Amino acid sequence: SQTIHQWPATLVQPVGSPLSLECTVEGTSNPNLYWYRQAAGRGLQLLFYSVGIGQISSEVPQNLSASRPQDRQFILSSKKLLLSDSGFYLCAWSVRPRLGVLNTEAFFGQGTRLTVV
Amino acid sequence: AQTVTQSQPEMSVQEAETVTLSCTYDTSESDYYLFWYKQPPSRQMILVIRQEAYKQQNATENRFSVNFQKAAKSFSLKISDSQLGDAAMYFCAYRSAGYGGSQGNLIFGKGTKLSVKP
Image (cartoon, rainbow over all chains, first blue to last red; front, side, top):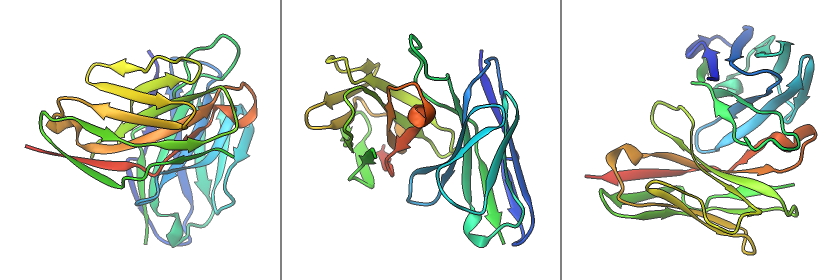
């Protein structure tokens, strides 16, 4: 069965420090991968998605970047954190949409609560 | 661009009663998918139910059912026989049925916080 791992679960970082959140998926290949941010009272905002190794699309201009060095690994990074980067970050995967594929939902990791101080 | 609106920030229901959460969406596409996700206090996102737009029959999963009105672009979730464990944030989400680029992405509403009273 497929599983998704995201770490760390919680993180407190000072302003101006770097960030690296990691997400890995097991039990599937060629997934679509996503990073979402959930701010209080604002639902889930898609930050980045990836349809393959090295292929990253950004949905929202910001202080963050993403990378996909391996098929099932997705990393969210920042060189210098801002206070506004605080929030709950969720990694997710889905089967890559293609003809005949009926699985359409996204599966989420446990999330990382990031507090920038 | 597609949008999803959940007009009820908070809802409350008595245990064993029925509650309906509302969701409307805006799209020019004819084929798409709709979802309800549950996020309990643990923050883990859990899929509750899924509806394919080309299906006229409303999806059901045990105590959870939807009322899908395609013409009205409405997708409400009904929870029957509410249980304490149903207390959570509920998110409505939309996904295009296409195959390319960003069409696999989910677009979420802002959520409805459901409380269940014993």
